[in-house]
Image (tube, rainbow, N blue to C red; front, side, top):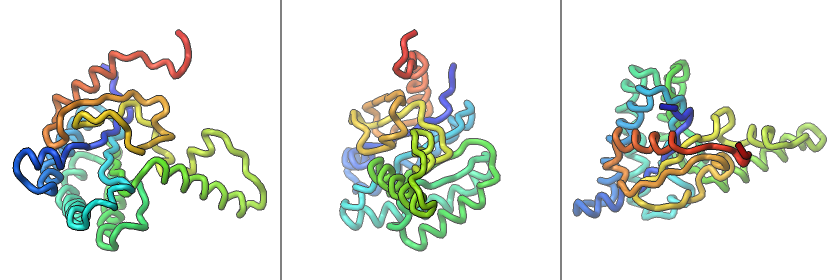
Length: 232
């Protein structure tokens, strides 16, 4: 089995899962933690190098305040509770997104866990937090413009150099994108990076997504021919 170097997942369906249980939406987000743990463990087992998880988009800030606050609290607690598991499994932790909108408490937790796991050499687990594809491209354009002003000239620009200004600089583009819950769109996620990514959509709600579901997605990925616009 060919193991994708980078798997990215749009973790969708937490709210619908909670509604089916007669619970508030936040309980779906809490239940989704088990799926994060299961996928991280499986990726570590089979040798995936990068696992990125779309946890919270720029658009999600427009959700009801109690849900947003509950999500942020859940993320802060999760980082505290999972740090020993990350250390034991040699996982490096990173967060990618607009940090300017995050609370000081959450930022401290992120920076602490990133520093603590920076020496780990196994799987890199990336939480996409307060992220959107359009935001990423816009901030990359601003960074390029600022660099040109600082240099006093228009700097050379091609695809590779522009990618170096993206928030995901240094992270390889995803080989496989998975979206749970049956939705078949990418919802403003990694618009630049997913130009040649293989997409896999499943009706399984995120809190029910486990190792078997991830294995099935990888098997489908292995059955595809990636030509990158070329002819065999």
